[in-house]
Image: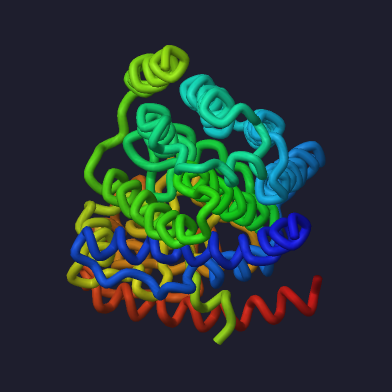
Length: 285
Length: 144
Ligand code: SF4
């Protein structure tokens, strides 16, 4: 059964992720009073990119991008397999490092600036990600996802602060405004496309694909807060995931990009207040 | 229609235009015209672009820049000259620093006339560019 979930993720995540991206663009357009592209637009983009010439900057970059994809898939597979949450998040960080390094490897000021900002973003969200794992451990006594989903009541009851903190850093992880510093889905940034400036054709397509896998995994983590031993909790988790994504899109369209100091400070303050206090209270009771 | 024609990404470069045409290009992205309906994205990055949209003529300074941007774009690619300045120099043709239209330095595929070119004309130009892109893609596939 666990292998079945893993296989399901492996096969379905690109479709789900692509649809989410399409929904994202459609909703964003609607919020801006436009009609927006078709729902399947991200898939057209992906196929087009695979059909384009990939201007190879250096061989290391291709290797690093493939590494990013593989480790993101590994992260998601491990998560849906019901593996150890700590290991899942470490794999996620490793994937992030690959992504950042791929930008670093190119000899372009824009992509190296993007890489630096990506590093800054990782610094901002990483403490909260760890707190999520610790929070689940304190509330359920296990790091293992398969144990967590079998808990009596939904973990969000114990971890509201940590859930909020995770939503906050989710904006960074999904590369949404106001925290889309390193690269942005929207046109024209002060440093071209940031991290992905030097990537083209099939390589860029692989990055898109990895992001789809990543987004589905992140929605899985959101769902993990909701699900419990009762199967009906899964029916609640799904709308919660969609609502979360909708809020992220709304936030994306409402806020302007902030400077990195604001991102770092606010993310850490939220981690400290929402996350740590939640943990303390949990330890006291 | 294949995926190429459904996802044309633009690169907009301002040569020595008076900014009239640029405003019309940007107008295409607004809710009134909304070119994103056709999957068009205005990327700021030559390495992601399929269509090179250029306004204004070529002058002594941007000649190298235009050529470099063109070279950086991955194949298949199409160049669209927007506005009469980009087509042949237009009103600035006689200026001492102007070399002429965009086709003085890079091969231009589609000419969109007008001063300023209207958003409808620009969108029409882009649609024709997309058809051409499709042709170039099959040729590129054969070569590869
Ligand atoms: S064609 Fe007219 S509007 Fe366009 S750049 Fe030239 S002078 Fe300006």
